[in-house]
Amino acid sequence: MTKFVSNVNAYLSEMKIKQTYLSLISGIDKNKLSRILTGAQEENGSDMERIASALGKTVEFFLQDTLVIPDIRTLDNSRIAFYAGSPSKKQEKVAALLMELMENIDEVMSAKSRFDNVTRG
Image 1 (tube, rainbow, N blue to C red):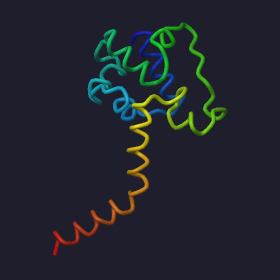
Image 2: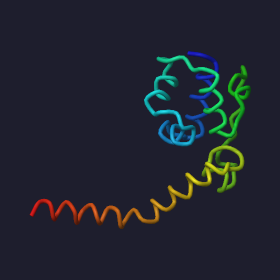
Image 3: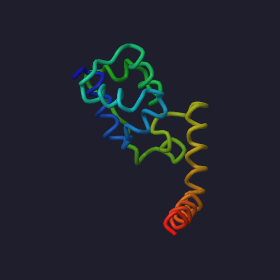
């Protein structure tokens, strides 16, 4: 496993970021991202850029011998939502979509339940 991947994994773990979220914000297919992060597939320069950028960092940040990861308990709420720096426009768009989903989750689950009941009867 490369230094970059090892440091990205440490960062994801410490910051409690899921691969699914990283896939969503980086635009890297979740299966490919999984192979990269497990070392089954070697990352290329483009992958490294997309991962680092999605996390609000530079490739160089993840190539350091000693990775300094911020304590998420000390970050303000607006930064915790994105786990890194100020949100980009893409991150704001993704956050808005996630918030909309969360605000309507009861309606979605209720509709699913009603649909399931109709299809059974």
